Length: 349
Image (tube, rainbow, N blue to C red):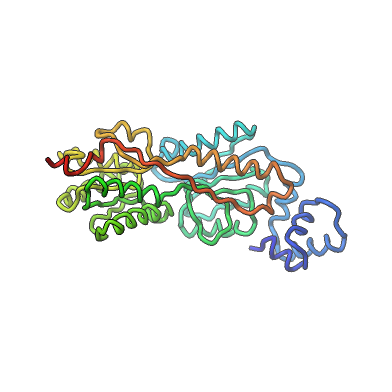
């Protein structure tokens, strides 16, 4: 799919000139205008229709594109509800409308059409993954520099705005805390590796144990899918491996809570027999028994910042499509509660 750079090269002009021609902005030699339009037509440059719509006006809507996930109530999950809360607050403050749209992760979603048909002025993508269909959809956007921001997912090599949190550092600090408290046989329950935050959390876990001289043991690295049900399922394997474990780091609170429920049903004493640390700091983390030590992720702030950056971007410049993409990474915070116990030697006395 051709982009503005291809049109500029074929027409023998700069990308800025292509943008001015397609948006009808400023004085322009007729011969230059004709060369650009001819190049755009020859390359079937789709963004010329988008540029024309932008020149005529805006929809007043920020689009939020979410995945359709079977058996998952998106709006009840901490991740989606917190990010949407931050988005909603920023949209309200800016006087914009909010348009929710849903995509099938198994199909290539046409983000460009949202702009071509003037349904949205900017767009935030939630729950993206490394599936080939998701990657292809993002590749179609690369180089166009549309006001689109992907939340909490990396697409290496693609020039697309993103806002995320430092998952690797958060995981590293959580596992270091366990090590500092005397734990050495530390397992890990991760989510699906199709999400970049899963690979980042695994990297933080691996870095912490490596620095402590603890060998990586694949037999105590378990696979969940970020659901509470998967945490309960993994509890069966963890129960069988208790002789190899004294602590577990879990990649999100929902799995950690499911794990706690499953282990308690089997009579496991927590945290006496097993220290547990989660990730996210959801509302439920402080309501479990024992209360869950976890890594606080600023999801609300991520949604707010992404929205403010996008809406400021399109409201303060006639040439927003010429601005470089922004990339924000927010810090996490370790919240210490009872589930990781105190110093391990004190627990075993």
